[in-house]
Length: 285
Image: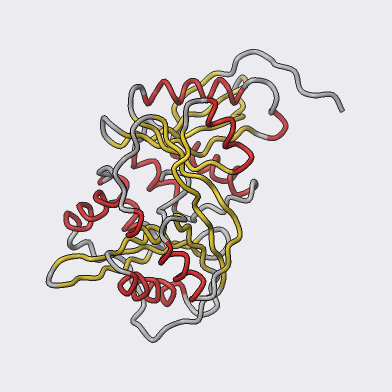
């Protein structure tokens, strides 16, 4: 079978929420296993940050380029339909996405096969992120539950200190999304850790999981696992520099199954990796 040949340049437009739901179906077909309620929370993060490529009227590719304020953005959901690859659609999407983020520093989580390509586009390697998966033994701690809507400003400030930028619009949707369960830990009246577990096409993903100490992270993970339920498969993406995070995942019966690299173009946000026990999502950072 001959390789595809470049055709007319695709049209690029901003996605609607329905478009984003379609693209997440594409991502599921690629084995990315998105969350059941990802579309609404993702779109709320930056409604202009999701671009769709069309061949005539047919959607054929996508990229997300979410801006978190004026200084930082994150690139993800970069894919072209298998039957349309090799026609320059990805290059057109990439150019449009990078242009949309302008002079911001840009982060991404790159799969091994694409890391050299990202490096040629000016992205520098920061660290590996290891995906762990498995069915943990449930602890005796109380399970995480739906967010009650209280304490948002405090959670958002704690989150921004760990993520590296404020993302209030995203968090409001993420914390309250259907099926998402939230665990928060407080010490001396202040938050010292929080996490979210969400149902996915297969199993559950934990993210974020931010904590001041491993002991707190252990307690939060236990509550999130209990919130997912007996026998549930959990997925946790841990930055490799967090050795306590790797050890915690393995201690709970999870095993490494996949890796990506956090890469950045421009100055990297200040992120306390030793306190990041679980990345929120590889698509939005």
